[in-house]
Length: 79
Picture 1 (cartoon, rainbow, N blue to C red):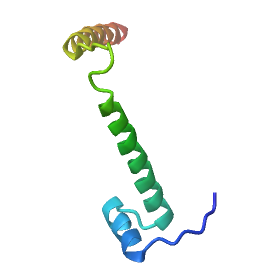
Picture 2: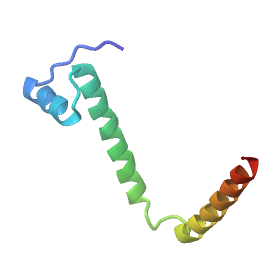
Picture 3: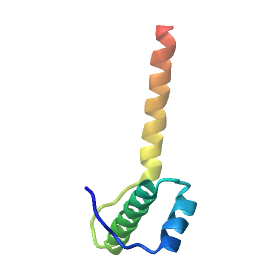
């Protein structure tokens, strides 16, 4: 979508510098995506402690390590 925006030059240059992008469009797109991501993260953090969701990351990691070992054994048998 094309849009005409009045964005201060110093702000655009700073976004380009921080993002490493030479293109103004890509730099602004990156900045907008990052802003959206931060706002969604804030919303998730606001929900912290308000849900009944329990996640045992250590148990999940053990399961994943066991599954990975099984995959590696299966690959080794094929060779």
